[in-house]
Length: 258
Image (cartoon, rainbow, N blue to C red; front, side):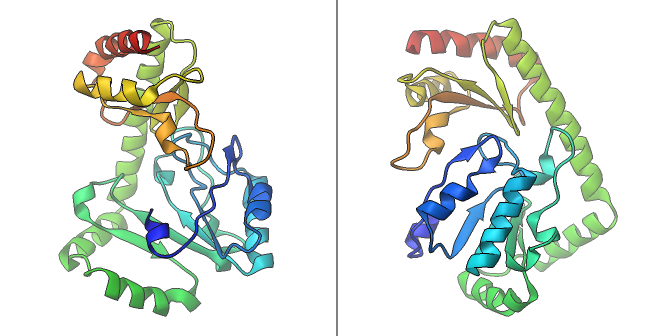
């Protein structure tokens, strides 16, 4: 919606187990000026862009003189194995605009984001940032800079990843004990796929009335695409002492909805 309001025509491209399908994108949008991607950890499926797709994407940007806008979405909180480096840090970085925020890793109220861009774009991006929004508080910027420089931020990330990994494992183990047939770990979420025709939006509303904050998978699909049904369970703020009871409650609601 933000792109459309800015006069840009977005073309949704399918994502599979390797990330965005670059070949499909070339066919669907041969004259695209940019590609907005989340290679570190795609939401909501949690898949990382494979090395082959990363190369294909960079090759496309170079050949077409287009830009890759790399949204650093939760890449710092990669829970499975070692996260791949950012596109903006390797070969082809001259075609990459890397954007990110500290909202997920620290707190939304900090109100700080960042851009890593080729030197030739810095002046233009600075001008746009100046006119589009007021600068963030200097004191917060200085404090965060020192927090990172002294190594506290990276220690915080290590501890956070450990906690989230334990919580996701607890949720998956609990769902398995409850005889849930499929529970997919997806970044900071667990996805419960549902059969075609299952009303996941209705279930999400019923769950919220029961104080269970779940999201429908179908809401994440672009307009006009074939949406799949499923339930997304966040792991970041689950309470270990309530996981089993909440899972049983949710499964009861799922059976009544199907």
